[in-house]
Length: 326
Image 1: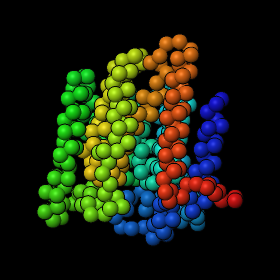
Image 2: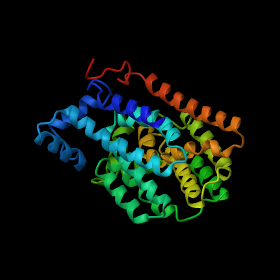
Image 3: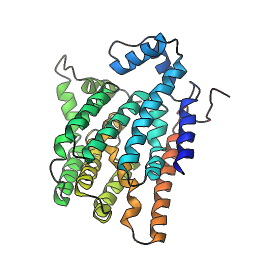
Image 4: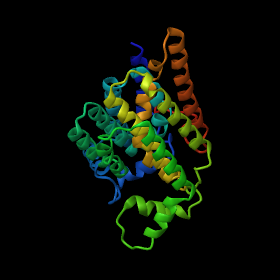
């Protein structure tokens, strides 16, 4: 019963928000009426479909949120140990940044969530299908395809630590910057992520160094927590292996791309979804009622910090909130 108020609350905020909410919303409004040619096919077709039925941009925003939220909610209900805790974690950065702002990637994340569900069931084919559907909403979700092969191997603790330390070393010597600089000498690479990285390289607004930052430290702390507690949660081997690989690769991608913070954040998102499944089972690592209550409180505190940090960002256009009824 506790789920209903949370679902209604989040849906109201997203569906009935004013178009002034979110830094990208006004840009999406212009794309709704005049889609760019290189925009993902889902956005162009959905905008044309809504426009065909004389729908407004607000209807389009609501439709996008329904796709993004329903896929995540379905996966949380099917695959998380606590749907409510999964929603608590989701209500922070995931909801505010990607379902209230970067709606294309928010929808892609929802479809990748469903891919996780089928991976938990060891159904690689349907996982691949949903990743392909996610690519129709945001091309960066292609980075999740190798995960289908990687999770076939067992993520042992020794391999876990080895990969992490290699990634730390490569990040320290700025290995990704070296690769991108090398590729920049070749014309017509045809790789959108590489092109975007090269455009960010000289743009101080996006080219922030993330390696020596609190975000990196917090990700490493959570990764250590996963490594330490995962065996105590009573998870089946398939789920445990997927969460370990997902959390590890999320940090690895973030570290390797840390020279370009925006790219590091966006590319690591699909693997970071495993964090939601981990925290939904977090209380299972502890014995006793009081310990479990404290664990739930820690999860809620973590989600609250994510909400605070997101709302505290300058020019985020999320606060103060304004609905279409205001």
